Image (cartoon, rainbow, N blue to C red; front, side, top):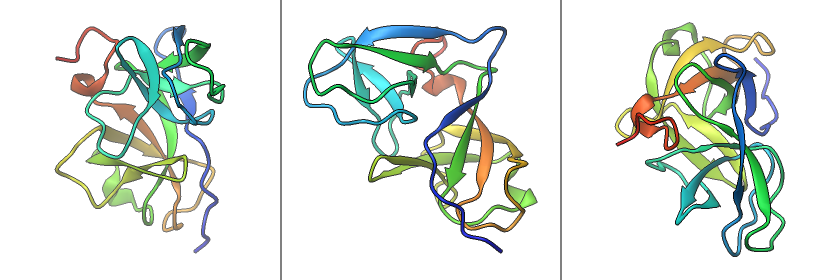
Length: 153
């Protein structure tokens, strides 16, 4: 099977019409378009591995200047994202709940982490073959981890 390039997270399907909001960038940020982000003190910050809350996906690179407005696609139940996995895809992972892994500005579904559940896999991406290393999947952020949906606690 093939080894797939690690891509930024992309919005796959938007609940209703989707929701893009703008929030000020936190200080000292270096995230890239396509990274999961959360708000800390109301400002956009890149998520790290196993981030408890996910506000959404950045639609632009960080500017490096605090308080610059950053567009994010809000993570809420029903909105799905296409994300690479940390190992290989299989049909058995569909419906499973997994963690978030982040390295070098690349965000992946951590198939080895079923403790820090952040996503449910809804489907395998049609862009890759089953068994591809770092293949892409379609995920939804679990409601309890959606920072801005009104469900997160």
